[in-house]
Length: 422
Image (cartoon, rainbow, N blue to C red; front, side, top):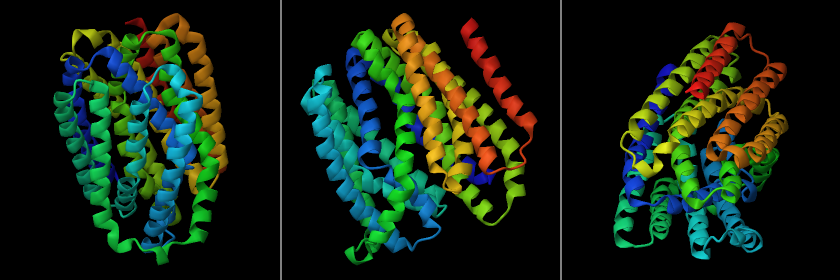
C-alpha cells in the first residue's frame, strides 16, 4: 500500500517539481498585474467545469470496479463531448452577465474556457490508468503534460508581447495535443455502440449530489482570489497568486496520496480487510505531516530564487500549504462516505466549510489583504477536516487510534502558531 502511494507521490513531485522550477523564471518574465489576471482566470476555470459538467469525472474510479472498460470509456467519451459543449455555451453566458464587469478581456476568457474543456479526454485516460493501478503510466503522461506545457509556455512568452495571451494560448495548445494522444491510446475502447445510457444515469446519480460539495470546496480554494480582486490591486493579487501557486505544493503531494490511496481503500474495504485500513491510518497521519514539512522546505528554497517583486508572499505560501495538509486529511476521511454513497453528506460538509471560509474571507481580506485570505483558508480547512472525520466515523466506523488524531491536530496547531509568531 505504502509503495503505491509513494509511487504516485514521487511521480507527482517530479511532475510538479518541473513546474515549480519554472516559477522563479516566471517571476522575472511576468509582471504581478499579469499574474493577477492569470490567477483570476484560473480561479474561474476551476469553478465553472464542476458546475456545468456535474463533476462527472469523479465517478470513473468508483464505477471501474463494476463496469466493463469499453462501456465505461465510451460512455465517458460521448458524455464528455456533450458536457463540454454545454460548459462552453454556459460559460459564455456567465461572461456576459458577470465576468466582463471585472475588466477581463473576452479573448482571455475564451482561451481559458477552451483549454479547460478540451482536456477532458486526457483526464479520462488518467482515470483509466488510476483505476487499473498503473501508477507509472499515469505519472509518465502527467510528466508529458507538464513538460510540454512548460516548453510551450516559454516558447509563447518569447513569441508574443502579451504575456497573458501567451500563457493561455500555450495552455490551449497543450490541452489539444494531449487529448489527441489520449484518443489514440483509448481509441480501441471508443465506439458508439458501447455507449450506455443507463450508465450515464448511474454516473450522474452518483456525481450530481457531489456538485454542491465540489462548488463549496472550490469556494474554499478559489474564492479568495475572486474576493481579493475587489480589495487589492492586480499587482498585489499577482503576489498572492504566486504565493498560492507555491503553497499548492502541499495540495499536489496530497493529491498524489489520494490517488494512490483511493483505489486501495476501495479494494480493501470491498474485500472486508478493515483491519488493514485501520493499521494504515496511523502511517497516513505521519505521511501527511511529513509531506507538509517537505512542502515548507521546498517553498522556502524556491523563494530564494524569486524576483523581489514577489518575495513578500513567503508566509502566505506556508500558510496555504498548512491549509492543504488539513484538506488532505479531509479527503482521506471523505473516502469513507463516498464508498457507502453518502455523497450528500460530503457536499454538506464542504458546503458548510466553503461558506464559513467565504464569511471569514469577507471579514479578514479588507483588513489584512492576502495574509488575511491565507488565514481564512487555514480556518476553513480546519473545520472541514474535523467534520469529515466525525461524520466519516459515524457512518462508516473503523477503529482508528484516537492518539493519531490528537497528534495530527496538535502538530497542525503548533505549526500554525509558530508561523503566526514569525
